[in-house]
Amino acid sequence: MQHLHLAILDILRVRHPEVDLRNLLAWPSPVEATRKILSVGLECDCEEVDRLLAPLTLTPDNAARHSASGDPVWPALIHANRDTYIHPLFGLDINPYLFLLSNLRQMHRADWDVAANRREGRWQNEMAELLEGSQYDQVRATA
Image 1 (cartoon, helix red, strand yellow):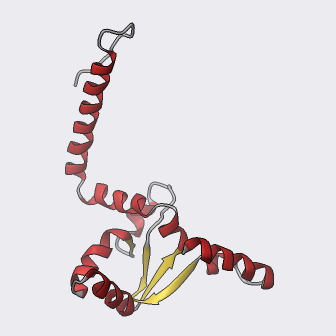
Image 2 (image 1 turned 90 degrees about the vertical axis):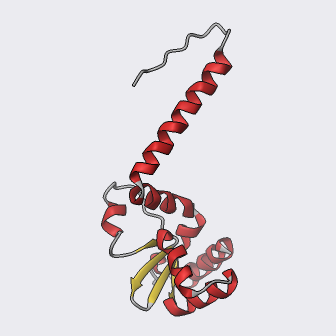
Image 3 (image 1 turned 180 degrees about the vertical axis):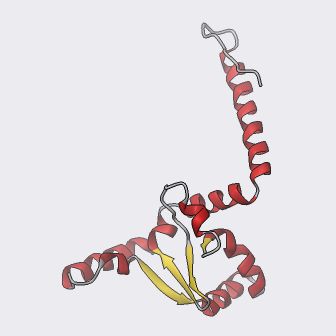
């Protein structure tokens, strides 16, 4: 769907050069309509939809946290005001998981760090098994 949007966007850009390209890379939708569509599609109530969308949505409450690093922010949704979501094309097309992971890391920092440390230890152990008996030396840092 995003590729179709990009193709149409290119046609519009050629036909109407006065239109700012940034205005074509996102589209608004009513919050209530989005909630209802998703609740029907996911077979859940609107409160559950809100809970599911929260980690994927840029809001006034989390905007400063996400923009503090200086990295690009790619939310799947932007909660523009009480009644409107903005759907940025590249938030869905590039990688919606980047925003989700950023949110999860910030909201659950202690759990995130434990999981990262376990993963690092597992990788070190797997590398040691791969290199065992080889000509390469293993250097392991101790904590």
